[in-house]
Image 1 (cartoon, rainbow, N blue to C red):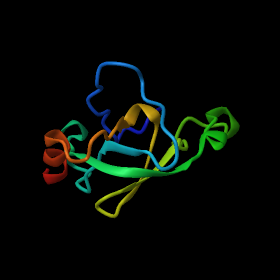
Image 2 (image 1 turned 180 degrees about the horizontal axis):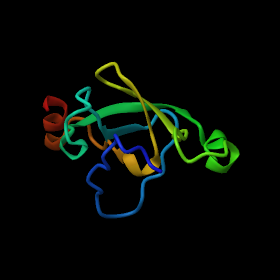
Image 3 (image 1 turned 60 degrees about the vertical axis):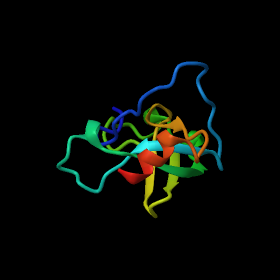
Image 4 (image 1 turned 120 degrees about the vertical axis):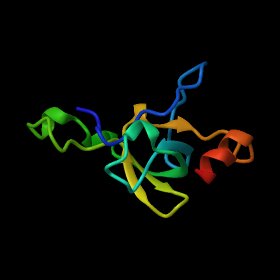
Length: 104
């Protein structure tokens, strides 16, 4: 099961980005757990750890509280854990869409 608390961001058209530690990304995040996850604003941050070697759900023998692949340090100071489907490349941090995402 994917993280039910993390809404998948809008997917840009084109090739699927490949992520690595240090990459700038955006993901939906809110401290308001009662809010609809689809309405959470996009937050920018940097990938700080890749847990690919530890994420195999069969290795833990359960389908709840599974590990997520990426640790992302958001620019707002929060540390979140996300799967690849929950991320999008941040692109140009000076773009209008990025600026508006940071203001939300």
